[in-house]
Amino acid sequence: MGRLIYFEIHVDGMERAKKFYGEVFGWTFEDWSEYAGMPYFGAVTGDANEMGINGALMQRHGPAPEPGQAVNGYACTMGTGDYDATEAKILSLGGKVALPKMALPGMAWQGYYIDTEGNIFGIHQPDENAK
Image 1 (cartoon, rainbow, N blue to C red):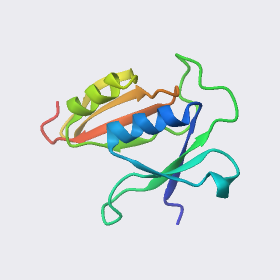
Image 2 (image 1 turned 180 degrees about the vertical axis):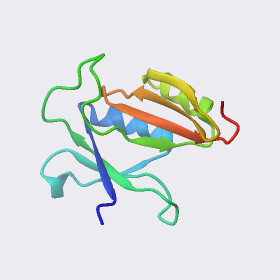
Image 3 (image 1 turned 120 degrees about the vertical axis):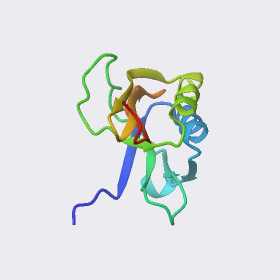
Image 4 (image 1 turned 90 degrees about the vertical axis):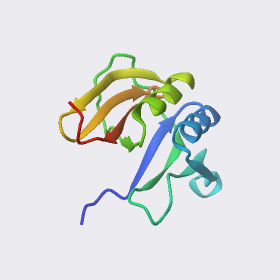
């Protein structure tokens, strides 16, 4: 009970955000705007038989986070098999580094980025040799 089952990312530029998350992580989107009564796209983040959750991109209803502001909400982290290639995609599509790649010794590589909408998210590559 209480397990995280869904997420929503608030965006200003729906098409820009769909392009960013689609190209970086391979997500696909389903238009649920009519059902939601606002611009709202369901995000399919991977194969239903693999561990993970799906979510959505929704139109932001207030101001975007201020640059340099501390995280004041949830930060989602996406798994990756190739940290450096994922970081390169993020940066080439307009994302920015929030907290650079760091070792979680004996466990993984972790870092945080700012998407095209000003939101912070993480990427995580398991690696027992990280140090």
